[in-house]
Length: 127
Image 1: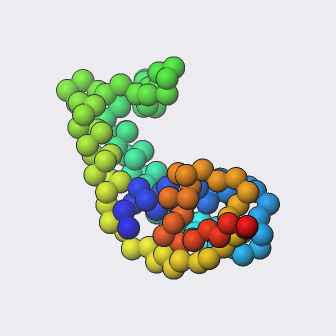
Image 2: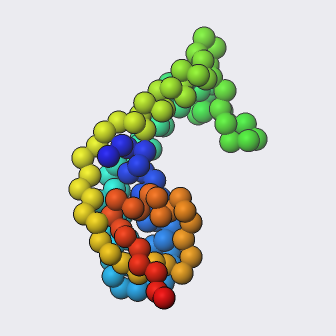
């Protein structure tokens, strides 16, 4: 599994974990979070390192963020190189054991969440 896929699964599980769900679905969400948490943390740490390597900083060494939430690259560095490094990070293969479970579909779920959780969950829709 790619690191970005583990990160997406963690984020989807984190969002759904705030909902009241049938027990089996809730337990499956907890399992996904447990199995992907370390990879989500790794992704965020490595992404932060990349940002620190590429971004302009203020006098205190903090990354300068503009109003849109983006940073500018330091002189001599290219945004395209940062984006490639970030993409390569997401493509890193990680060992995640994803055992598929059949669970009741949440009342509301986005297509993005279904896709992110699909290695672990097969959602059953009540007729």
